[in-house]
Length: 111
Length: 207
View 1 (cartoon, rainbow over the protein chains, first blue to last red):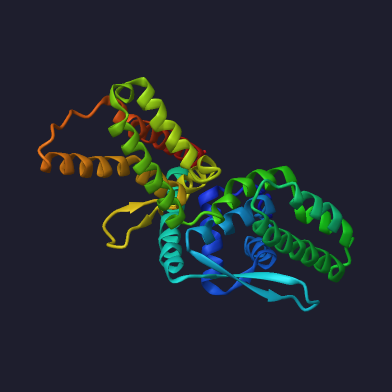
View 2 (cartoon, chains in turn brown, red; view 1 turned 180 degrees about the vertical axis):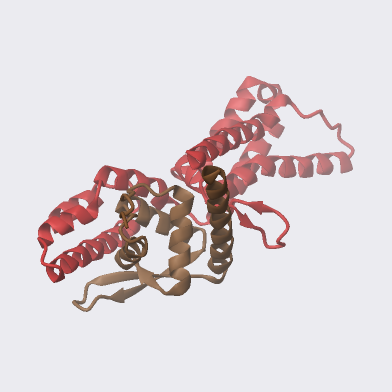
């Protein structure tokens, strides 16, 4: 099966929805989050750091996620993100919204 | 690599406490990329450099978001209330001079001087936020951040103060004047900025 071409630009709202969906499953730090999304897309998606961290910080400002300081095995400081209660509600809404958009595009483009 | 990262973070136009957060977060990101490269038999230095991506893109995005961490909503409301009191008193007590262009300019200047630092960048970041359902679950809208809190307070606050002054004057039996057009300058300017930035944010989201 042909591998999907890699995309290095994720629509802004879609990245937020993907971040929230990943954090709904587990608390993650930035690098782990980016790699998880890339692996799940089987390499079709490349998460740019230029959009990931600002998106995380915006979600933090909105109160959708919160960050805690931890330590990596070698002792360096690490910020781990987790969904807040409001974030769970936002994540659910974003997921439904983007699935509806995907269904609509599929229906429109397949016809 | 770390030196380059430190220089980049030092050059960012963001609050100093946020520089510490960004530096630690990017340092961890780069180190993770280098460790993964070692595990997979790739060049760790090249992986670390690639992990940072386009620094100018990162700079623009961080400088748009980070200043908002310095200002809380309550801080912004406090600034808005201070501006409201100043505008209302200036227009109310300024006599005929404050009823026209001068009054409008004074009101706008006060609103600008009292605005939180980088309010426009904050407003743009807030306007780009995803819409969420409100606490009552009836209406959907963008969450109100510090910039919007300031805009709403400075737009409506002068009228509240002014109405209180009018009521106080009327109850003392003193004559009450009509509102001069300069009283609406801040409200109109804020509405215009919200409209323009709202449309910009929707266009950017659609793109």
